[in-house]
Image 1 (tube, rainbow, N blue to C red):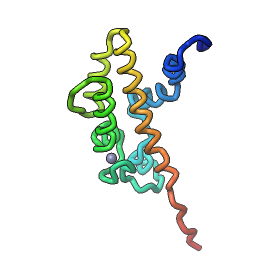
Image 2: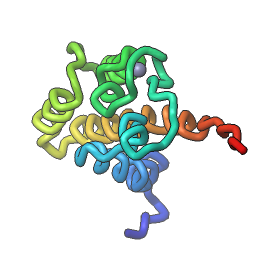
Image 3: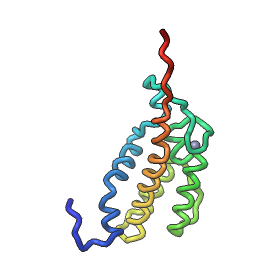
Image 4: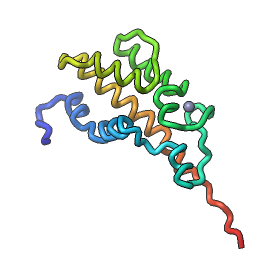
Length: 139
Ligand SMILES: [Zn+2]
């Protein structure tokens, strides 16, 4: 879809959220390549959450059991004017889905911020996978 030239900066940003939406879609399918999956596939990774260094990095942990990601989403909700305790991934996704049913600007903004938060958390942990240390070759 072509973005009109007269669209505001914010509208352009929201319309350019393809990567963000893709990561949210993967999360909805429980298909984020978290370290627990990499371990199951035989890839030698540490497994510990790179954000809090406390617990196995699973999708459930990242979204939003992890104290770091929970705080990020809590702050985002607060910035949007919502005051509520952050639950787990299923609870948060369901809440956003039910709350943002309308097409009013605050609904669109809530959905965009949720997707952006998930994407931002995912981007923050992704470099952890690059830290796979080379193993010495046994001769
Ligand atoms: Zn964590």
